[in-house]
Length: 242
Image 1 (cartoon, rainbow, N blue to C red):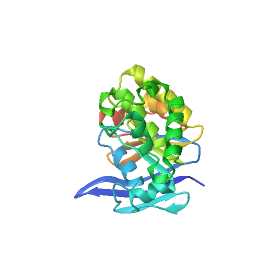
Image 2 (image 1 turned 90 degrees about the vertical axis):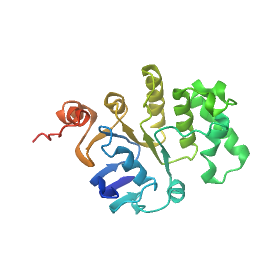
Image 3 (image 1 turned 60 degrees about the horizontal axis):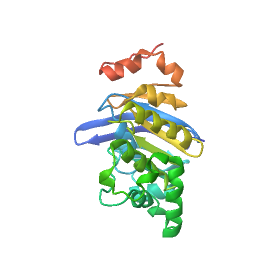
């Protein structure tokens, strides 16, 4: 059984139809990458899964159970953690405090959360020395690592990552995707990326979104050879090979 199964999902913002019948699946243990140009509906898909946006119609099944329309707090408790675009770190809290906040849904003791936050620095060694630094003092790449660590503190079965490489220097992007490759050992990941090369480098499967529709799906090597990816990033119309 798929861990995540989306069927004919429609999301509207007023009269604008942001998602027009999106269907996709994510199996346990996979990294699935959702590719597409800016405005294609990638972030809207994640927001619908995590309860931040209410679908107009369609189904979202998590471990076989419907979750469409549930609130974000309920969905986090079910085992889905969303790391949104823009990091959204609390600037007046320390790095460790920001990371600990990710475990607030679990009702764990502060001492346990503190130990787990310290353990996160093994996965993210580049931010260990900033444990006591305030959020506003960190670089963009460091903030992104804090955001992912915070998402993992919820101990999710499914981690939603929205544009983790956005605005980062290439060397930082490389380091971040090495961490994502490590995360996949214990956590299923649905990754939204405009950087097709990096997104597919860690993926088992990929989907291409264009103007709210899935126009292509396949394994990374299959997608590389299809002009639909180029068309999606150029804003044209993807052509699916017969």
